[in-house]
Image 1 (cartoon, rainbow, N blue to C red):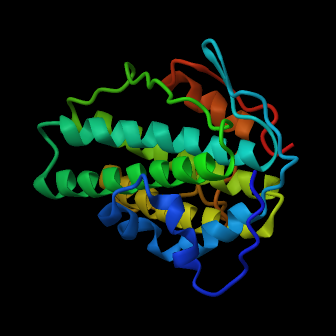
Image 2: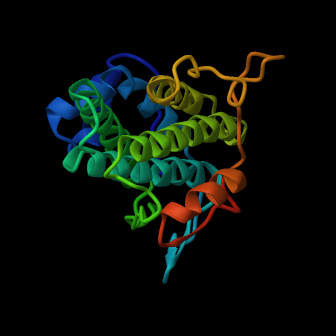
Image 3: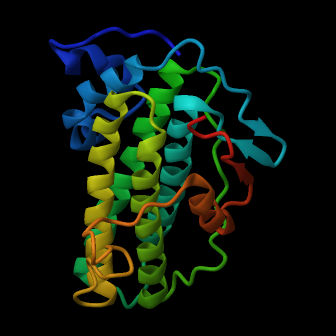
Length: 242
């Protein structure tokens, strides 16, 4: 990855090229607050973060090191973005107007997360980004509110636990700045959709340890084991963070 050594000053200006492929309105909705942090985050990537070509037929390797962590996040954001895009395009008939509006909003967030990571990896680790994944949502009943909410809770809880679990794999401290901001948004999504499905479950004991007050964390292996059913390609995350 390129050695970017910017450490302060006008960080948003410095990071501008990163977001050229992203629509300006969309970028500033999400990335304005994180632009500088991401520039610093990517500055931590080293030239020796070499990763093999991530795609081999129907198998997708996320790679290793810091790029592997970024690809890991990008894969999950692709999945979430595709799910909410489908909800937005064909909302279940029994979703309320307010719920449809919420899912439209969350679809925008997830698309921004996906595009943000894609732009970052392409700029600083050319050739190492994973391919576009093909979702498999055949197990989800998009025609019913209950089906949509159940899947949304599953995706959001999974996403939060994935970011929490990946934190210890991040080699550069600056990565935590962006990861922390993304996971905070994912946690808000999770809390909201949980309460839509079951009132008062936004921080239930199945996701927040009652003895520690800490959110659940999962390893990439655990996360991908759950997520794999929603992705047609076989995802190999065995070297993420190594």
